[in-house]
Image (cartoon, rainbow, N blue to C red):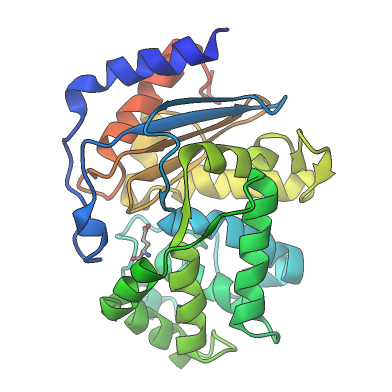
Length: 307
Ligand code: GLU
């Protein structure tokens, strides 16, 4: 298959949609994003990558980071993580607090904001947030092969200032005894992981281990066990896109994760990883153009896991 021609074709498929959707405004710096931007990248088993549009431009990965911190937390605490966070789809907005009260501070799954905060807490463990943050950065650098990946501190600051929702969630979870570190420590790691800046190409490379049973096919390194990779993919399929995870599975049919910056990471098991970025969001918070692009890509390739 001519993959470069493929993503160029998808780029023209979505042309009419560019600029549609609403850029997130609750984080002031994100509100400045240009909704016309659109980037896409594919990374394959042999390490080759194909990029279109603004696919080399860095943006903050926001909640795509949840997937990587989950992989690391599972590495550290293994199945004990599930004492603190569940595995069921939430079916409610990402930062909903209602369910959390009913379920006594145990978030529905690690891909909600409260779930990601609990994962950050476990990742910090007893060693402090700086070390945990350094580990996550190093992980992303190694996996993507880009040693200059860093944190956009202005966005982390902007998020922290506008972070009343996340602060409420962290304190609420803590009130139920489900955080072992002070909420502000946990929030600090959380904002920083959300503010890691990466391009579509780097993200596609970083996610490759999830498409190949936990093994980085390029370096031949075991990143996690096959069952852990499979389970992270299962969580992405059922809970990766806020309360439009069902719609995403219906339209695209790939494990994935959407983020408020307009990024989407999609795993094509045994084939590779696709990442897209376009800041205009649909009503549920998934990139509007990004989801259309993945839908077209899957139509053109037959890559849905439901064949
Ligand atoms: N940092 C964002 C927040 O906590 C991430 C949300 C997202 O990407 O879904 O609000």
